[in-house]
Length: 192
Image (cartoon, rainbow, N blue to C red; front, side, top):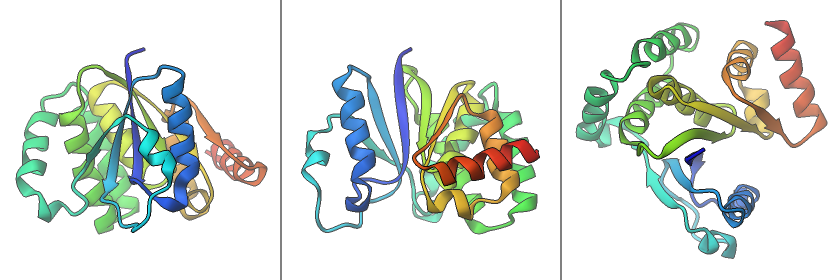
């Protein structure tokens, strides 16, 4: 299968040790992982599980204006990728329904991710169905890769039904940790 890029909102996060435990377990089974974080760490303390993870961690520009050269370089490379036009169409469709700075930031992060992913990465795995999955979906489309989603809690209930449905449809697989989360995701998928 090749390497897997795990897209997370922030890394490391003390409140998300469940993600770190999963990553540690995946590594213990021999999977080659990279961690791509949408933001720099803000927690003062770390859990010991974070120190046992060997995956390389790459931080995408949290605010695009803070890394204009990196974003521009990402765009220059990404626009030559075979799936760029399809990803751009997805983004514009999403932006028309969600015209926010957050949506624009996710597109910029996806450009950087798509441009900087090593060729060894064959799959993207996003933790949380809201912003990390937006970045993963756009980048996967640009690169012609598959992606999957781990949806958890707040992210399920704060993502519009149209967006849940489209992400679920595009993903290779979706997992969640509660029956109520499953029910919301299934309802969104079935309503589309």
